[in-house]
Length: 271
Image (cartoon, rainbow, N blue to C red; front, side):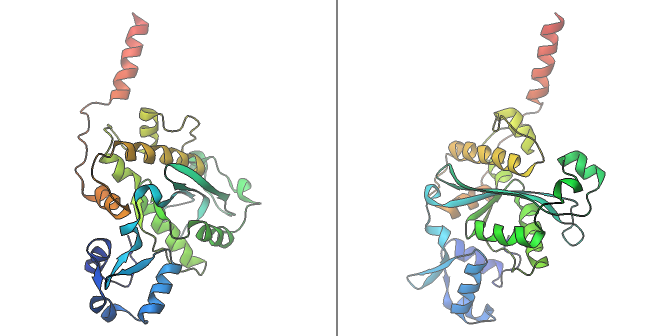
């Protein structure tokens, strides 16, 4: 992710793997090293020094000790420069347990009918909600330097990061993990849309698709299932991130098992 990070891709890879020497960092910095480290930490990214090399701290944090923040947003459109967040929810997770929750509607003056039909959120629902800047300032505090997790993480991460810019905050630099990519490598499914995975694996019995907290809790169920099914050697958070991007994907069934199941039930009823 790290689209607003000052270091190049090769340096980012070294920070997540074998370490980056100071000689490679200095030429890329606009500010001094100490200042840069503080700025990055304020943006959710903690870089530490070990034996003369720099690393993401997540390189040394076991998965069962790491803090993950599972996030979902609803928006009134897909373009951050034209549209805005209308609902934001998140949970902080440590060792498979939810330790804190964040949830808020966001004041909005325009939500088209199609979005309201999908989400169930109307302008009237948001009229007493806090404005975007207040919600995002509180969310930034809630997120801290936790690993940012979402289903198809690029959209949520970039939209929130772009929204931070809109309200005067620096963009996100938190390490991120895509639950969709992780699911593709740990569970077998005909499709990997969150609603389909919920129907298949019963991740959230009270799911209301396209409401932020409901989708967060469904993703939480998926995250736990994926970790249980991950039989690779995962020693730390960076191993998990690498696995989610590079491990072989599960082979998808040729036919939709849920559709076949319904057809079989209808056949039995007719007989």
